[in-house]
Image (tube, rainbow, N blue to C red; front, side, top):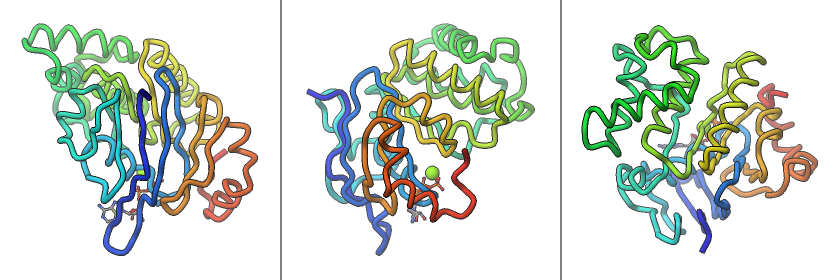
Length: 242
Ligand SMILES: Nc1ncnc2c1ncn2[C@@H]1O[C@H](COP(=O)(O)OP(=O)(O)OP(=O)(O)O)[C@@H](O)[C@H]1O
Ligand SMILES: [Mg+2]
């Protein structure tokens, strides 16, 4: 039984096949990179995995159970957490309250939710800002909060969608450390990231797509050298950072 498996998944929006027969497997404990130019279908794949949309065909399995078509809260409860490309914390709530709201997914009492949230906030490097209003955070800290909210739900598989966009090099290095720390704590990760340095340095395996279709999958070195990947990125005006 594979830990996580996407099999021949298709998702169309009108005439456009946003995800076109994509298949991949993720081993427990991996950091699995998903790359592709703008509009290639990465976020759509995350939306399919987390249940925001349903595939037109194909299947998604998590720990031996078919999950495509299940409701988002059910998928979250089964152990798949995600961040959003566009960060939407509740701005007038504190960092801790934001994370507590997520922790209620698995906590029965307020005290339990609070203790999960405190631990998660600390783990994500936001301990000193637990009582700050979320709307006042720097971009880097907002991204940390977004990760903390996903982690507080207790995922075994975490989907990170361009968590590092807009970061300076110092913030990028800190974020890499955080992702590695999350992975070391036993969480399997699928990461979508435009910054090549990040995805290449932390992923064990990379799956590359373009126009919704798989180009190739392999080690970072193999994928970076793949002709189809190079061509896909060369065709993207000024966007292939790094
Ligand atoms: N809800 C939707 N309705 C119609 N079209 C959509 C919808 N969601 C995504 N698309 C289209 O599907 C394609 C894939 O979009 P998606 O957001 O998955 O790309 P992406 O790889 O995440 O891009 P980016 O790197 O810019 O975030 C795009 O052409 C997009 O316009
Ligand atoms: Mg996207």
